[in-house]
Image (tube, rainbow, N blue to C red; front, side, top):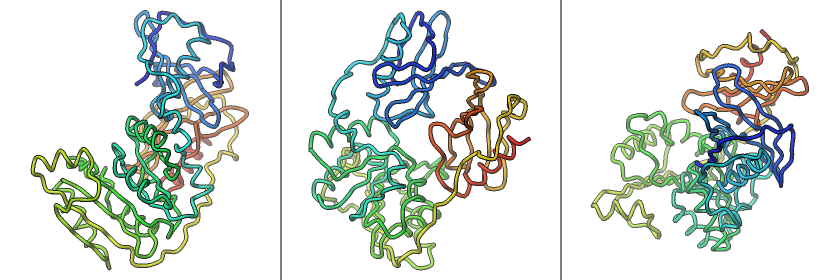
Length: 390
């Protein structure tokens, strides 16, 4: 994680602009928090820097909940902040800052809003958890007329693929740093030709975290075009049998199952297991019919709420659990007497949202952006508004 360790720093007057970054405000810990947070704007991105005082020094890093991609952006923000705050640096790990290939491939990195407003109208294939990116890059290079959406939450893997996109001059890949299960919920029906899931984490001890589930199969069937294919590839006997049982539990299903058939491109991960003699399983599910369109028309706003300077008295840090969702206010920060920042998690138990609420006289809104539209998130949002009403 990029960070700077400083002996001292000077807190400036906010907001203040330094380079392409605007540092909007600083939020001090009020309830359940120990660090301070600085609101940062860069082009269309918003995120937070965390300032943690430890002994006689300050550790400055990015807040995990709002962490943007690529890592190079974080490094630049930290350097600009410390230049602006006159940090007396002791140490950092910000080497290799500059016009890297990953930075030149940033055009391929898209946020979820991009697809909500302009989902590609060409043939689309999706790869979930692309890892090193070898399969994704091979498919994009082999099929230049197809748009590829690679979904990954591991930051170093994202950096590596952005670098290769620039080096190989590929223009048909979009990279998304997002939960794939939530991404599918927002994907238009009958819009995808293939979905690849190669070597997902087995999660044997936490099966609820597996990508493949009954709900996921339903969503995949909806977004796939008729005769579109969902392809699972795994080296885990447990995952294979678990997934096969789920696929066969469907009322009608067209499956192809193979074992130890070498694909056109082999990942480093797969090559290692092959050398060790492990079995590799493939399950391909073909979509059988056209699905009805989905409607996404819910607004996560707080327009009917008025600012309450005593909001802290209405917040409990104890998790509130309901039948199919939860709400957990975790921390509260104070910007000034009329501005607060509230950290919370909410939504479904297996795919919770982690957000902040920017709670001020001028506006009450999610930070850095609204949650994904899902049934659990809608219920949680309505409960949050009810709790704020008191």
